[in-house]
Image 1 (tube, one colour):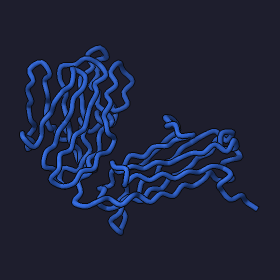
Image 2 (cartoon, rainbow, N blue to C red):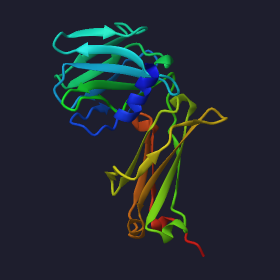
Image 3 (tube, rainbow, N blue to C red):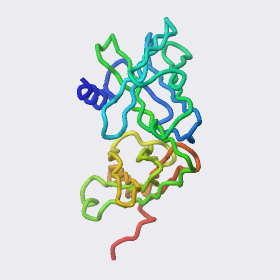
Length: 245
C-alpha cells in the first residue's frame, strides 16, 4: 500500500487533468519550537484535503484529512492535535499548521485530493519544511556554461551546482530565470546528494537553444532555503564566460 502511494505521488504531482493542486511556499524554514504553516489550493471546488509527510528515502505517512463541510479533522497514526491541525479559507484553499516544531518534523509535505471529473488522484508538488536550531547559511552556487562541442548542435545546457548546508536536510527550491522571468521548461533538477562533509549537493540543468545563448541573454540560477537570508542567485551569459583561444 505504501509503495503504491509513493508511486502515485511521483506520477501524479504533474498529472495533466482538470485539477491542478498548487502548494506554497516551495520551501519554509522555521526555528525549533516555532509554528510552520503551508498552503494548498486544490484548483477546483472539493470537500476534503489530505496531507502526507515524506522524509527523503522514506515512504509517505498520512498526517490528516480535513472535511470542509463537516469542519472536522481525522488523523493518521502518530499525528494528533494540537501539534498538527488544518484550517480552510474556502472549499479550494487549505492550510496545514504544525505547532512547536522539532527537527524530526523536517520533511516534504504533500496535499492531495480526488479529481472526480478526471477520475484521478491528484497531489501537489510538495512543500519542503526545514526545522533548524540556528540560522541557515546561504547555499554556494557554481554555474557552468555549455561545452564548446555542444554548441555545435542546436542546444546549449547550463548547469547549476548548489552546495547546501547540513542544517538544510538537503531541502531547497531551485529555479531558473531569464531576464528576471521564471523559466518553466527545459529544466532537470536532481535530488540532494549527501556529501562526506555532511553538506548536500543538488545539480540543476537548463537546456536552451544555441541561438538564445548566442544572443547573450542572462540566465539566473536561484536556490532558496526558505528565507531571504538563505537565498542565493548566480547569473551567467555568453559574454561573461571565457572563450577558447
